[in-house]
Length: 504
Image 1: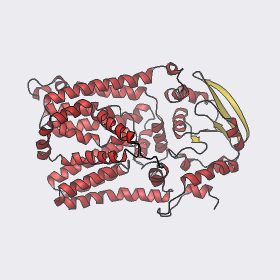
Image 2 (image 1 turned 135 degrees about the vertical axis):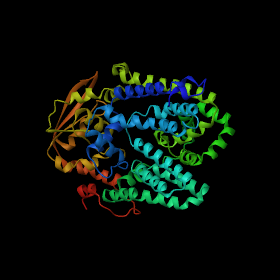
Image 3 (image 1 turned 90 degrees about the vertical axis):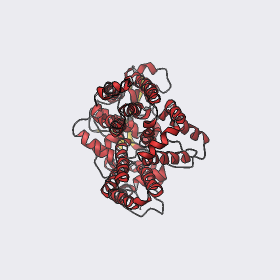
Image 4 (image 1 turned 45 degrees about the vertical axis):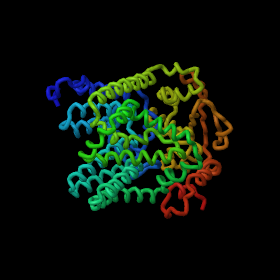
């Protein structure tokens, strides 16, 4: 929309909306260009390199996306392009939704969404990326279906919700929120709810089949292995409250509280209640969980944009102030991230976690240190994150040695240690230091090679003649007991890992 269609005296940000949008995009691209590939990103790239109907931790959507991207390029900007685009989608959708009703408010709320901290820094492509896109689509289609009453839109909303489910299981909370809204506030559309469910069924069936055929990995990770009696910690609830204030920003919350009575009529007139349900119900569930479990910031990504829509009914003055303050906050975030990305890692040399900084902020240095080892050497670390990062920067497969954690065990699907019996393995320790005695039981001979990486003395263990049987006894048997002890309530399915290593 051209600026001359705005009313006289429109705020500067509204009049220069396009320039502000492009500036924000440029900042996000610069951040994406300069930041090294993170552990999670590198891990999801391994998914993209191994297309499947599912993966250890989550449903497969981000792996499918990255598989298509990798067919074109593995440059960080190509990998992160989807994350950048989707993080801007809430802002653009708000503009598209409201620019005919009130172009000034539409632009200001769009900019508030653009600069919202959680969305502004979201330049990575992760499982939350397709979840956000398909979650927005599912909720928007449900809103349109409720307004028109046409059954076809309900079915499309269900298909979009199914795609969100194939992105991340938090889509279940979104589905519950939409279902509760229809049952409680629009019961005459109960047939539409059945159509939404019908649209979701294929995605759920596909995911259940893959899990049944693959050790129930997603179920075991999300319900069994990652939980274990953390107890009650009221501080988590306080942290969650602070997180919400940070995400929505104190100034926007202040203006919403101050002008609260002005919101209700607009919400009712435009049937925005479904958006409120999609945001508030999941956040309320997280509030109930918070005393028992730490809530991750990224958990909120798909839900918080819906709660920006009531801001469309705030005064122009309140929105203008909020947009300016949010822009300043976004600028501070950009400055911090670019400083971290561009400063020499040696600035952190006196910090006790300097070896970690070297690995994650200067990963190419670590990759170069092992570059002289030819393909006859099989590379390993003890961490899925470090293995994934090293795999990206070396362009080679890097496995996970030892038991690892309940996170990121995709290597269980990829590495068959039986095939490595007698092979030569290069082990790269996490922080440079190496306990030789932990390696010697698994090899005919272990030689420690000392290298210096960015001022850190790094010990590389060259293990010759890998002893699979010793590794099975000391490592794989405990892994089977710890991570593959299926509860009785799970139907018996296929599991390549237990078939590979179990002695039964």
